[in-house]
Amino acid sequence: MHDESHDIRSQRIEKIEGLKKRGINPYPLGFKRSKNSAEVHSQFSDENPEELSFAGRIKSKREMGKATFCNLEDMHGNLQVYVAADNIGQENYDDFLNLDLGDVIGVKGITFRTKKGEISLRVNSLELLAKCLRPLPVVKEKDGKVFDEFADREMKYRQRYIDLIANTRTREDFILRSRIVSGVRRFLEGKGFLEVETPMMHPIAGGAAARPFVTH
Image 1 (cartoon, rainbow, N blue to C red):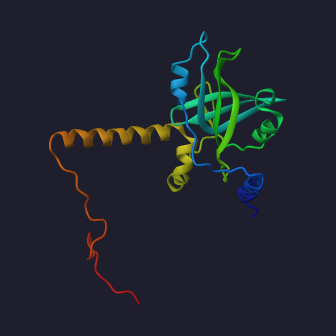
Image 2: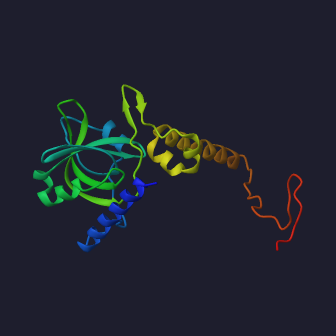
Image 3: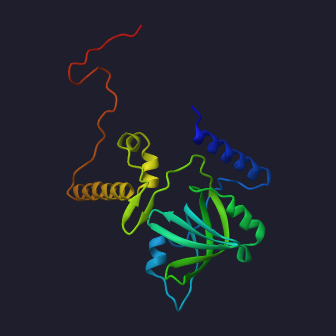
């Protein structure tokens, strides 16, 4: 049976090799982000456009000739960015078009509001931060309804990393759980309790009707 995902992975590996030959690191050490998506939206001002840096995973691209609207997602939500050849140069724009859904990029630019009223970032420069090798499920949302969701229960448990990337609800649940555990821990520590680790491995078998045995 032909594995389409294997072909996609091979194509993306070829892209990585092409970047390396041009002296471009597909996994650079870091990128300094000035704001996350939630901060960009909450602090936006039509009267005072702001120059900032932002990083996120490419979730969608809408090409329109020499310009593209791209949706980037971070841990706090989504931000639309506007990438045009006139702003970043034709060569850089061609490199951008060659990026795949799932790639993580860092962008710098100025905030603005589109004609449809969506808060966006007009990109002046961008760089690849992490190349995504495997295709991700494309989850679409319209009018509050989710389409093509990564919903198979067994796959969600076996490939939790995909579930966390594709499904916002799962990611929010994990964040909430982490905050609850952290809050309980801080409360108990404030009351003088001490947290200790229970042994992960025992020298003898334990639990239920377990019996020690010697392998061949």
